[in-house]
Amino acid sequence: MSPTIAEQLDPIFKARSVAVIGASNTPPKWGYSIMDRLVNGGFQGSIFPVNPKESQIMNLPSYPDVASIPEPIDLAVFAIPAHLVPKAMQDAIASNIRSALVISAGFAEAGEEGVLLQDRLASIVRSAGIRMIGPNCNGMWSADAKVSLSSAKPIKPGSVAFVSQSGAFGGMLVSQAEEKGYGLSKFVSSGNQADLSEADYINYLAQDSSTKVIALYMEGVRNGRQFMEAARAAVRKKPVIIYKPGSSEIGTRAVQSHTGSLMMPDNLFDSLCQQIGIIRAKETSHLFDMAEALANAPLPPSPGVGIISMTGGQCVVSSDTCAQLGLDVPEIDEATQNYLSQHVLAAHAPTPRNPIDIAGDFRTPLTFAEIAEAIAPLPSIGILLISPPSQRSGADAEISAEAARRIAAIPSRFGKPVLGLGMSPVSNPTSGSVAEIFQQAGIPGYQRPEDTARAAYALVKYASIKATHSLH
Figure 1 (spheres, rainbow, N blue to C red):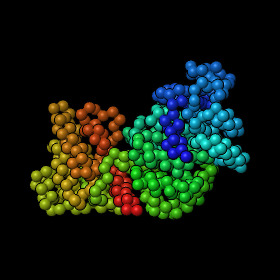
Figure 2 (figure 1 turned 90 degrees about the vertical axis):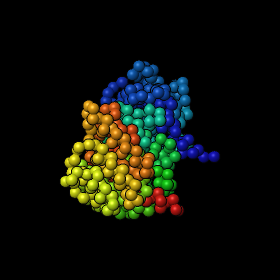
Figure 3 (figure 1 turned 45 degrees about the vertical axis):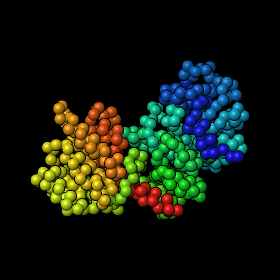
Figure 4 (figure 1 turned 30 degrees about the vertical axis):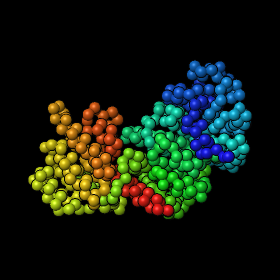
């Protein structure tokens, strides 16, 4: 009986022992970087440096070859010149490694000789029945095993898995996500995909209990049918978001020289995404903004967007971006308008049709909560974009906290998502603050109104996708 995808990839993402072939004491060599990340990145399994020229590497005994290691190896990492990898892989397989990751470049992306070398490597791996990441990649990260092979510091744990065909650029996107306070369950720099492809990662992540959203940076599709089947099955369980460049002739040429990927015409790829139920990000910065909302917020029961803002400009930009994305910002009923005008809003505030502008009225933070509680029950409103209540200090801090708690309770009370509008990311919010209350409630916050609107689009889009695909 063939092993399941979990059995195939668990030795990578849940590794308990790692051997580093080409480990080094010399920075900035890859063998040094990989060792440093393992030793100082929180990995709690066994680490075995392999280098016949060294007796110790980072205070660990170094082994001349994998056969000399006294324990079974879940994951072997190769950081040696490309032409040495096939023989080293054969030797490691003979010592019963369970999986492999090849950092080394100089394969299909390097020309015809590299293609032949990569084909040879792939044949060795396939014959042995193990799975391999790469070659020409920048490693991976898994929160499950606290194994970091891609970053100098541990990545913040979260529930979004990210697969990137670009190693360095993917790492930049991860850093940008962390700056916004987002975390990851997994990160993979897939490289040339001589063995494992996006389809394999999607199949694995679709059943991974620590992953709620699958995000991908893709430059090309190697096997369109396998990718389509994997993605179609995955979107029934969790969202799949993709950013794919290469829509121009120049971009296509750059992709081919980068990872040797085969490009699909962009209009065909877009049609494929629509058919399968994949959400496409139009810019790299949108990828994690949308993923974070999908990972934390409930799906809206209806597509209507309610907007509550402290300024008129924010109302205009938010509602305009929603309209550009095809989202409805419905006018609320007259009875609710009258209630808000007479009992909640300041006399100078404009008529609260939606969006609702509090017109700079900061008399009490409770205004935000009272408006949210008034429009959340409306059937026409399925999702709320709301400015956070103003943060008071001293004796008035509890008023801000009460307003935040009331807003944070809306998803559970009404089954409708709330997104923070105009919220700057806060890595370590003050205890009891509005930011902490929102974070603990899983309410994503976005500094720009355009980003908040795109996050709302992702929630509405996936709600529609899930409803459609559940019928087939």
